[in-house]
Image (cartoon, rainbow, N blue to C red; front, side, top):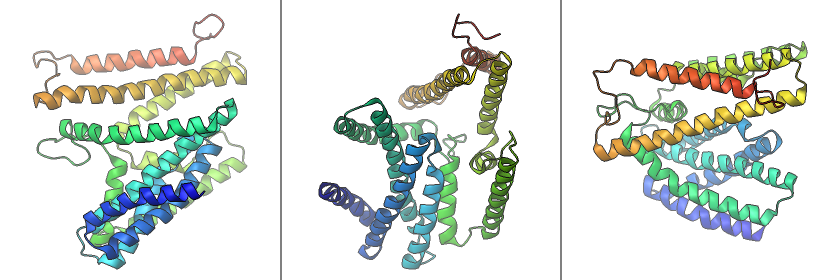
Length: 335
């Protein structure tokens, strides 16, 4: 524990120096650092517990980050005043550190739990987790800069009128700016909180009645605030999974085979998500090097680009369905 505390101190110092450079005041950067340590400790515990208990897919990072930014912004508002231009940036910086810490805590605890279950050597796991965290920290900044130059992120500009969507980041920035500018719509926030309470009550009522239809508050909230262009593929993917599961149940598959089939479909879908992200980064390289967003676009004389994209999506959906419903005994889809 002594070594852990020394490590925390050593890694806190450069973050305090970063805060000092941003705000230029020791009276503000020191409370920022203390806020970061306290909220980071509390929320890393929550994140790690949830990931260890259920899995990193249930890690409530968005809620953790928004709660951190809200609390930090209120404290900084008292220290810096409502007219401070650097206040929102300072709150976001605290939230960014806590968000990264919570993500790493959840991921590490899930890895360590899996290692425990398979009998891995703890110290070797910890060494590799450290290497992974350091590697990702070195990779993320250049990748984000590449994406920002190629596509833009979040806010439309003249150079990037259709940037990559960042709904969570936009929400957090709006909360931070709203507190300092006095423009945060508290009425809307109160209405949202009441809606959240009503959804939780409805979900618990459905659970008590044993209903197969449920309204988990996180899923409903994500459906409310994500833009339609993101929600549509999520809905279609969920609908495809529902149809595949019903098909397997009608085919007389037992619970273990249903779980294995669901795992295959999940792995396939996760692979497509990861592949899409990697291709987005790969495509950004020629866009940045050439300085043209249309360097890989089809010639304007061809009018089948959208139809070709739709056809590819349909083929992928068919392939995903066949993968999820494949009969393990002969490799063909279940009948």
